[in-house]
Image 1 (tube, rainbow, N blue to C red):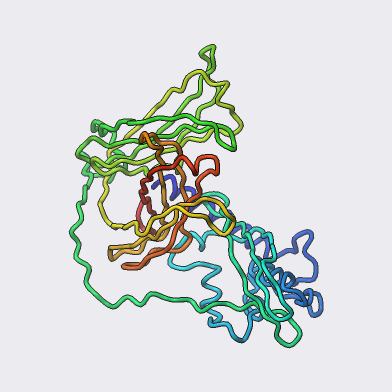
Image 2 (cartoon, rainbow, N blue to C red; image 1 turned 135 degrees about the vertical axis):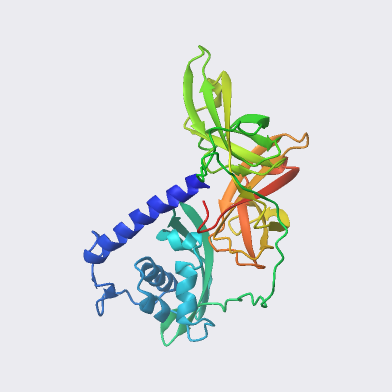
Length: 379
């Protein structure tokens, strides 16, 4: 959690600085914009569906919300505030820390008065680049193409009292200080229960599962060193965010450690290292994983999709899904993760999906999902 918090804080400072610099100067390659507004006549006319979507995304990228909202059809069922919130995010979600970096458009179908454009959107976020695929429906209005924005279904949760029945572990140090990861106490007993090294599209990866066998919560990190035939280390990496770092007693988490650009054929041995610290923790908020299934997304890729249900009375700002996939022998053959860019409000749900490598999709017999989460105001 502390690692993610640090990344978010640093990235937020960088993004704010970039925003302030961008507001005071014109970026190279961007002509015809001053003070965030398009100069008359220099925005390309939306006389094709592709140009209409391009104009919209350019305005979103530069945060010209009036112009972006003006690109919508009169038949759209969204007000400007809701439209802006969908792009900017709300409730401290990952989207509020993200910027639209670029896009690729592909026509799906078109007639004289109706069209559908598929856009692959690339976002920069504190946890790395994220891609999102979105379909835009357009219609012709007054000789120009306009985007039809669907009406958003907002969950209306009635006022209620949510009982607090979860377990909680507090850490009390001898000097009374709130010390994160006490050093004067024996670390919790955690163990690597499985390890599998495979070649991946980017290089090689080491993956498996870790269990907290203790009766107290643990902050866990897993590292690995690749060793060649001569006993010399090739590279060492750690699991970073592809693990649920805070493990409650008896809890199991998958992990994955990536080694970009390294072919597994050059590796003779893998040395594993696991570190654990005692930390305060609680079993709340409770996030349920619902309606899980493996199918194909709009691009034909195999994905595991489902819904996350926040069963608590707290807002989960940044949900993080980590899934382990097993073959028919129960062996972990892949670990995939993904962030949900919308906040999980109390008693509401949000969809999620994580990718499965094309070469492994046919070998997956079962899977297991854990949900890591970051909430503002907590470390």
